[in-house]
Length: 97
Image (cartoon, rainbow, N blue to C red; front, side, top):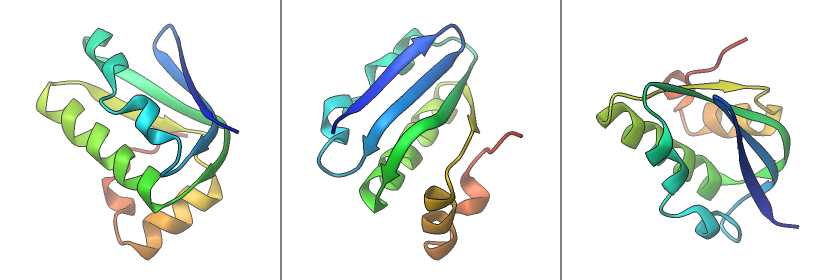
């Protein structure tokens, strides 16, 4: 399995695996260059994420903040929430309902 990130309007839809083996496909994450103000990351199709995937996500959030882009996370899987809790970074995640 691989990772696919598709832009659908103001939403990036993630499908597949966001882990150390797949995230290099999106490093650097050039899709953010096309965003002007805000974007939603929809993780409803995400099957798996590891700590490398979480680190990549935090890197994208930091880059977006520096460039005045607001990111919201939706359909966040329990696995991502658990990793964020264990690593004490959950407060950094802009999770929307």
